[in-house]
Amino acid sequence: MAKKKILVIDDEEALTRLVKLNLEATGNYEVMTENRGSQALAAVKAFKPDLVLLDILMPDMDGSDVAGQIMADKDVSDTPIVFLTAMIRKEETKASCGVIGGHPFIAKSVSIKELISCVEKNVRRY
Image (tube, rainbow, N blue to C red; front, side, top):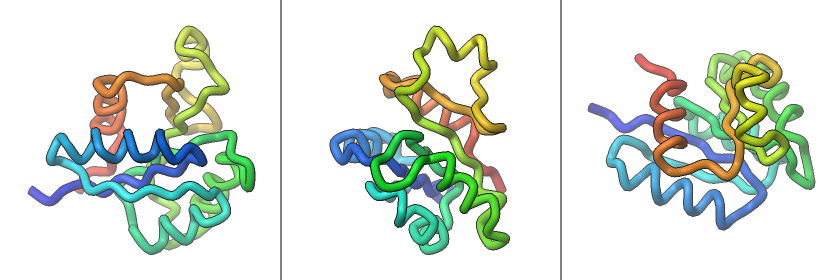
């Protein structure tokens, strides 16, 4: 079975490295990271991921703007996006049904087990 491609977009390099290492350790995923929101659309178009894990608060471009760019580009608009954010606490997840702007989200800090479960639930399947 081919590995699913996951793109992690977050300005925190330590976090993207940790997520990459842990997802790749499962043997099920090929992971690319991008630490600049302004470069996110180019990364999505080049990598063609099966799922994007996207931070909301980044210094050069908000994740909501990045998601808008992805959804507006016909070549990649069907790419699933999961927001990975510190803006909302885990306790608030239930109140919003785990969705922001029509996209699922997980609250930082997330355990590796929760992260992998979320990826498995939301990854595009062919």
